[in-house]
Length: 175
Image (cartoon, rainbow, N blue to C red; front, side, top):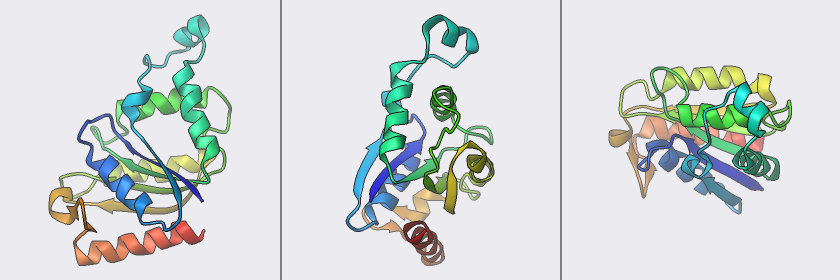
């Protein structure tokens, strides 16, 4: 199984990249590709830029990663209640390549933050939206209080949250 995973953030110390990487590493025998959105920085999408210069090669490159994957894990950073600009821009450009943005792929969508809601607002937006963009959300998980609930070596350390994470990961794997 080919797994594509990334944190939907351009922070060099992204806690969401840490969570997505950890989740992907829990899938035994998987061929894992971890992306960094910083490698896909493009001009802010606009129809004028698209008409003038076409779709950037980086958008095509990202789309090819999506096509090559069997399943995708994303952990969302929440910026002012929504997607990070870095993620939204990649998705906007990629959506212009073909109508089916996510290629029918199965998703494990997650979010985390240092706060008590764990990015739940943006996770709700993504789980509600991805189905309309060619994705199949098989599982979702929000990790609140990242710095108290996660250890880089052990993963989710809160017992109740770990149980929920494991159930959601199992749903994603068996889907």
